[in-house]
Structure formats: structure tokens, C-alpha cells
Length: 218
Image (cartoon, rainbow, N blue to C red; front, side):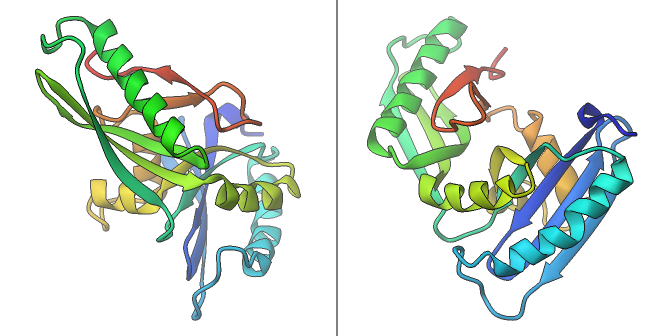
């Protein structure tokens, strides 16, 4: 049996391709990878192909690792993903003078995003400009409606989505052909981009609320 803490599972979903990956976190290698390419583009609400794909692979993975998949990272590539930049004037003009000031500024930007985009779940929050007077942050998010479609499907397998990630963000950060896609996702998930603020859900069942773990500039 492979302990759950020693492996992580990624599900990739786009309009014409599904993929599921299982990585051995301890030994940094891929344990399982299956893909399904579809000729016609699929509406995101049409879960028939994805449901069949999961039926064929979830059991195989659980048999391979001799354990249940309880949590999964969902990687979505879709033109409905929101990309937006928000900038604020910093309350303290001394760059890096006090990490608490930066935390407060980041919290203010995040709250501003949530206030104006209440129907969105933040997937990535990346500092793109941190100057003496201004802070600019890029948000990549997905709507609650789209997220709920996948939540409800995976509940059938007693699997919870622990994190959402953008497929475009992952591919744009690395070169497309560099390494396994799941390994690239795992690196970003675990802080490879030093300018990304790590979001930790307070409650997996309610992904609209987050507490922060600030790795930036520490």
C-alpha cells in the first residue's frame, strides 16, 4: 500500500482532451498516466465522456496504489477561465521594509478581487509587479458554476477537489515539452513560482474562503 501522503493525483480537463496522472511524491516519478483525446470539442457541461474516462481509470489507480483516491488536483484548460490584473497603491512606500505590510497589501488586493468577482474561485494569485508605490497582482480564476459541475461528478467517486489549477498557466510558465505535465503542475503547486501566493483552503467543502500562507519574500 502506498500511503495517501506519498502520492498525488491530477485530473486534466480541456475541450478535446482528458488526462489523469498519479505521481509518487517521495521518489519524484510518475506512477500512472492515461489520456483520452476526443475529435469533437466538448461542452464543459457534458460529462458523459469524462464520467466514462473516470470509470475506466479510478479503479485501476486505486488498485495500483492499494489505496483510495480521496483528493485530486483539477487542471482546467478552458476559455472561460478569468485572467485579470488588479493594482493598488501601497500603504507603505518602503519596498520590503516589513513583510507584514506586504501581507496586508496582498490581503487587500485579494479582498478587492473577491468583492468584485464573488462568483469566482481563485486558482492562482501571482505578484507581477511589486514596486515602491504600487503592487500589481494577477488573478486566474474559475466560476463557481463550472467548479460545481466537476465537484458533483467527482463526489460519485467519493473524491474531493483539493485544488484547481489553470492548464494554460502551467504550460506558459514552463516550455510545453519540458518534463511530465503532472510534474510541472506539482512543482507549481508546491511553490516553484516564488511570486505566486499559495492559497490554502480553510475548508475543502467551501472553496470560496481562503486563508493565506505567504511564501513571498520570506
